[in-house]
Image 1 (cartoon, rainbow, N blue to C red):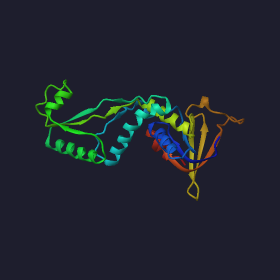
Image 2: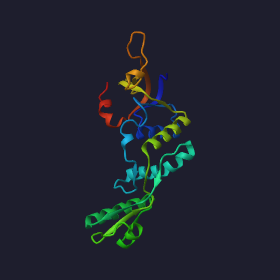
Image 3: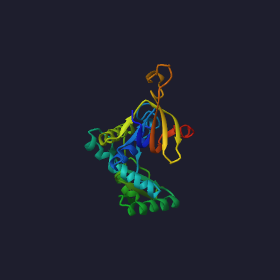
Length: 233
């Protein structure tokens, strides 16, 4: 049982596993991910997995750009498929305001090197023959590198990549307490067995056995359990 870590990530979904993987590649291999159940058993398992380039925030556009580049290469790195399917997408603008928004996003994506195209109704029909009535469409916004991925597959691929780099994942491990020391570091109290009491290790007195990990940083990546986790003291 590790008693010391540089960083503890709480939550084994796509966000937690992705951060673990990224920190591993940055050399933070003494990072531990703690998950109360199985990987992807929370918010991630029912996510749609859509990864579009079309987004109005510059920093989020960079994140999507990185994801689209990452998932195809994960299989080569880890031997596990990330479930990536590149398909492209066309978004339709029917009003002047929508057209202005499409032009804004196009300029922003061009700035960071993401391929996108403003196309007219004729090209829309050519690329998507099932769209037969375009009489009220002003233009289309075509992003050829959009796609979707299977959330469980990409999470498990990133988790394997992180493990291969030396990071650790503790499944079926429930966080029951977090306290910050005077020097800014943290003590994270955990119970092995997670949300399933039948999987817990029991001490001789019948109580759940607790351990503590002392770390520099704690990350709340618990998805829809984030408020409950944040309230733990």
